[in-house]
Length: 94
Length: 135
Image (cartoon, rainbow over all chains, first blue to last red; front, side):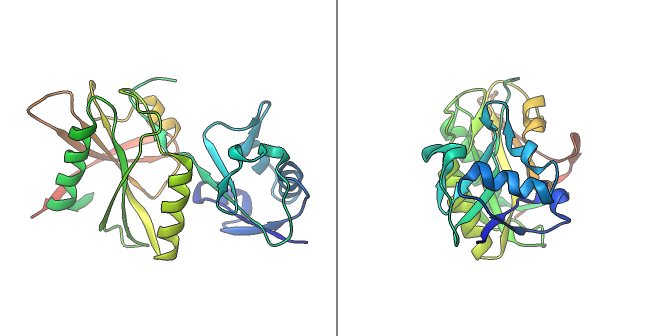
């Protein structure tokens, strides 16, 4: 079972520069744990105590998983998971 | 340094003016590896705020996928400050997630004069760069 995971430039330090890696799992949460077993530290960039990090976008195929079931979103063979850092900022200090 | 056509420069300024007092934001896409901005892509500020901007996540996915298909990259990521200077804030630095991009800041705090400046933001460090507007 293989699910393709697309990694943004800023996180490729965890994948030895690879733009794309494979992982398995039946939910997004499981998939991220599987990913982390080969690319240690990557999961922490995507998830914190409360779930998916606020300024990281994770998509299952074309949909933001926040509109699906977050870490509980089911994933299957042939799916593509894409990670993009949110583009945000502004004068406000947060 | 950032070299940008008059047309693209003016489109960014017009966008910032149109959205004032909310912050405006967007991308200039260009062919991968060439650092040459070509395509103007204004983005929705999902925060619709005078002090914060955030790309709508679904729109960002669509735009990033399209750039990938066209073998482009985000050469410029721009946004405006509406009451402060055109200099990256701590928040701007915290969320600068595209190490290859030129971060353009525009300020619309003055009605008559628009500030337009460009920066590289790498590993939390801001480096201002000169902007050349090509007529």
